[in-house]
Structure formats: C-alpha cells, structure tokens
Image (cartoon, rainbow, N blue to C red):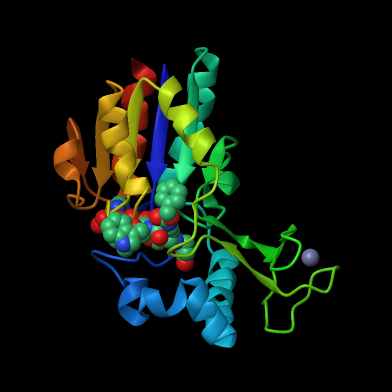
Length: 231
Ligand code: BV8
Ligand code: ZN
C-alpha cells in the first residue's frame, strides 16, 4: 500500500513549535502573517522578518520530535517492508520528521534550517541567526529558504506524482486554510483515493474526508499507525 501524508503545524505543536491557527498559542495571533511571511514584508523590514525566523530557528534547534513524528517514521519503515511506500508532504519548515527518522519528506513551504541567496538562488544549511548583512559566497543577500504567501510552493510536480501513486491520503495537524496544500484532498478524492483527517479539531475542509479522528497528534497518530501496520 502507498500512503500520502500531508502534515501541518499541528503535528509539531506538542514539540513546542507554534501553530498558526486554532487552539494553542497561534503564531499568527502574535504576528500578522501578512506582516511577516511575504516578500513585500521582507523588503520593507528585513530585520523584523529575520528576527521572527531567528527566534523560530532557535526554538526548533532546542525542540525534539514527538510521538507523532516517530510513528510516521515507523510507518515508512513498515510499509517499505511490505513493498509499499510512505510520502510525507509537509507544510512545516521544521526538520522534526527527519530527526524522527523519516527519509521521504517533501518540504513544500521550504526549510527553516536552510538559507537561500537572493542573487544566485543557492540554498545552504543555516543553523545560526540570519541578519540583513548575511551574505552568500557570491556576495548576494541571504533570506530564509521559506515559501512566503504569494510565492510558489516547492516540488509541486513531485507532490502530484506522489498523489497519483498513492492508495490513501491522510492529512495530519493542518487547518486546511492555506492553498494549494488545502486543495490536495480534493485532488485525492478526484483520483479515487480514500481520505482520512487526523487533527485536534475539524479542519476547514473536514467534510472532504471519509474518515476523521480527533485528538492530540501524539496520541491519535501512533494508534492509527499501529492499525495500518496490523492490516
Ligand atoms: C501560492 C511558510 C500560487 C512560512 C507558509 C484566497 C483563496 C485561496 C488561496 C489564496 C487566497 N488568497 C491568497 C491565496 C494563496 C495563499 C493562501 O492560501 N492564503 C490563505 C491564507 C487564504 N497561498 C499562497 O500564497 C501559497 N502560494 O498560492 O502560489 C501557486 C499556487 C499553486 C501552484 C503554484 C503557485 C504559498 C503559501 C505558503 C505560505 N507559507 N509557511 C512560515 O512557516 O513562516 S504557510 C503557513 O500556514 C505555515 O506553513 C503553516 O504550516 C501553513 C498552513 O497552516 P497549517 O500547517 O495548517 O497550520 P495551522 O496553524 O493553520 O493549523 C494547525 C492545525 O493543527 C489546526 O487545525 C489545529 O487545530 C491543529 N492542532 C493544533 N495542535 C494540535 C493539532 N493537531 C493535532 N495535534 C495537536 N497537538
Ligand atoms: Zn549567491
């Protein structure tokens, strides 16, 4: 069996990383997303935007994967043993899936621990603070390697190929508020995939799912993985 999992901020919430909407200390309540996560905001006040991402990068480095990340890594290994595959497409810019052992992870909104050169486009590892004078080897200015609102998400071709190859679509910890990620369930349904939502509360597109389970990801994801691996 091939499974396509889409994760959002809710899968990392119990690792102490903020969520953007819904319950918990939503990041966007503290900051206006259009103020911080757009190219215009970065051009207007790069120092503020760097500070926002520097704080999140430091928080991420101090954080650890939770039982939901670990369960998804176990699912990937379990499916591979059965000749199947798990693709995790994440809206998250953290590396908690990888640190939990997942190897097939697509970061459609970029990665907090990488920087990108505004001039040559080179992407490099970045675990330290970025500042307005941070430079690439080519002397270009560095920005977070993150997809902001109005920018094109990454790996869309690979994402649709993984959807085509899947038998099951599962959305975990996402509010279904941000496109094109929020539209993947509709594409999956049109392809005839069974769709399951695992979330703390119903998402904006909950009625598009055949199967819905609610609770903290660290509880409902491991039990769902055990069920799948027992099939
Ligand atoms: C694009 C990186 C064109 C930065 C992010 C009007 C209609 C439709 C679309 C638009 C529109 N106006 C503008 C648009 C487009 C826009 C968009 O969708 N806007 C929304 C706000 C309406 N989208 C874009 O601009 C995208 N680009 O469209 O380009 C295009 C399209 C197709 C093909 C080519 C080109 C780019 C969007 C990317 C923006 N960057 N992140 C950063 O991280 O700082 S988005 C940001 O929101 C985060 O990545 C976040 O992950 C993402 C989505 O949110 P979620 O992951 O779902 O997180 P959220 O907090 O919302 O929800 C958390 C959920 O978890 C909740 O349901 C909560 O209940 C649950 N939860 C909480 N705790 C737990 C839990 N669940 C389980 N356990 C828990 N413990
Ligand atoms: Zn460069």
